[in-house]
Length: 68
Picture 1 (cartoon, rainbow, N blue to C red):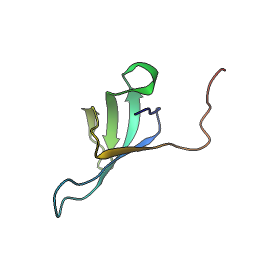
Picture 2: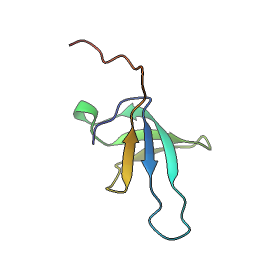
Picture 3: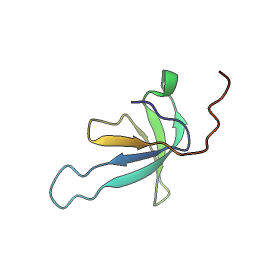
Picture 4: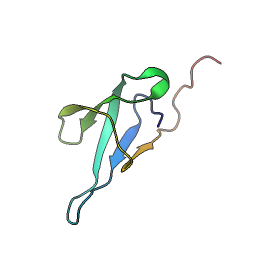
């Protein structure tokens, strides 16, 4: 899994009735875009997370890829 600041992290609910959770990645703490990530949820709270297989990174468009 690779993510960048500004990407969204979607974590699917794991049980019936549990909703998907969406968070913005505000800091990447691993090397080369790998977890853990500091994320901000829609209600404003922040959490340090190492996402599991039930999570998907939604990359933002228009971000600067940096030097090549």
